[in-house]
Image (cartoon, rainbow over all chains, first blue to last red):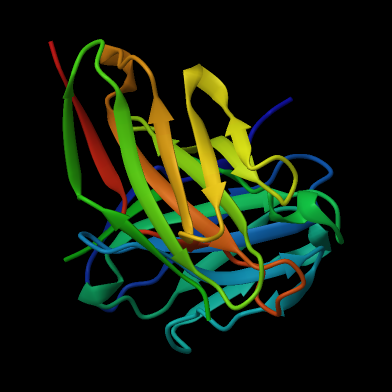
Amino acid sequence: EAGVTQFPSHSVIEKGQTVTLRCDPISGHDNLYWYRRVMGKEIKFLLHFVKESKQDESGMPNNRFLAERTGGTYSTLKVQPAELEDSGVYFCASSQDWAGALRHEQYFGPGTRLTVT
Amino acid sequence: AQSVTQLGSHVSVSEGALVLLRCNYSSSVPPYLFWYVQYPNQGLQLLLKYTSAATLVKGINGFEAEFKKSETSFHLTKPSAHMSDAAEYFCAVSVPGGGADGLTFGKGTHLIIQP
């Protein structure tokens, strides 16, 4: 069974540019999460999809961040326009089971390291 | 809101020695607790989990953790450290039935293994 995959693994962009990160969850996992780790800080929750619906986006920093999950499969996270403070590692995770303990057992991808210069 | 505190950003042990990584949590309701490990240049891997069953939880690679409600702790241990255990370890908490299903992480602990 393939794990969570993320693309690209690294991205270096200039301030003001746009970047789109992609996450492919484990097949059959309805729950998809985005997290971010800024250097020196803890991993922070950004948002949670259940299938194609946003269940919780309380962690999104501001309206420069837009997440989508069309069709309930892969997800994209777009940052437009990027700022210096957006640099960090963006993780995607997925879990199965809409209700119950298994929903909380999240499997993470390798992350995308974003550097904004 | 829940929170996690990991004591020590870096822990150094000798190969073969006991590994103890500390995690304390704060939660208004009984939580689910997790330990994740991140090896260099890799993603986070689930090491073990506590979801209100047995309080002593065994995970992969010889690690285990004990949930102690009275101490609000979920410390990670391994009897004998191996060089391959060098990595960053994260403790995380989630709240069953809570509105936000995202995990709340501690700041992580780098485990250094001395030969």
